[in-house]
Image 1: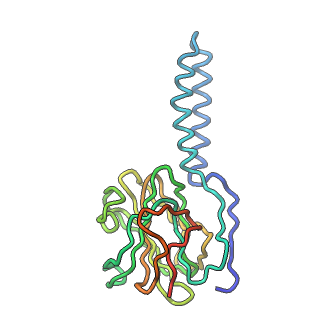
Image 2 (image 1 turned 90 degrees about the horizontal axis):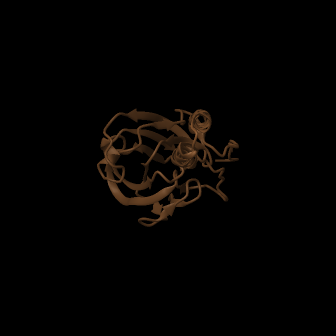
Image 3 (image 1 turned 120 degrees about the vertical axis):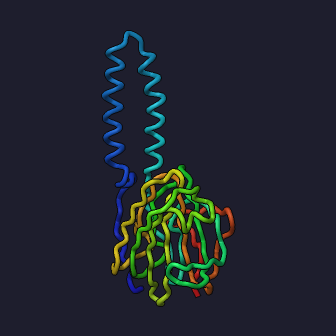
Length: 229
């Protein structure tokens, strides 16, 4: 699509977690100081530091956001929209928008994965639709249709429609979508963010060729998951 536009995102901690991490860190410091000065023994202080300090570090790890750029030509490539592992590669009926069979590739994101999502293809956002629903475990087949999800339809430069579905899981209760209708989108840009374990589905034309295998780990914005015809 001509010269690709890359929006520099010079962040190491995702913006979705900045306020939460700062406020919780401030609260931890205040409580730790009170425990240190209000007790004759340091045992309560150290118990608090170990327990809640560990929890804060886990939250810090969850909100990490590595700066990534795809190295190479992106024409007709589909890259992983998320970190995780491949849990589905199959032909599936998509009856909400396409009303025919599509190649479905799904990535499951555990709580330990980076939870930022990237655009899997260059193109233009056709529409964005959010659907309320259940919170089944994200790896279950019915999660794709029954769980709360956000659908982003992208039209590639070749005129192919690609559907990206952000799916909430049993733990994930918030889906954030940055994509806006009618805007140009590019690999390397953030599509959104899902809090806690979840899943991202990509629906491609049947002519697309998968480049991944079941249970293969993926790196968002880096792993090529398919090639378009």
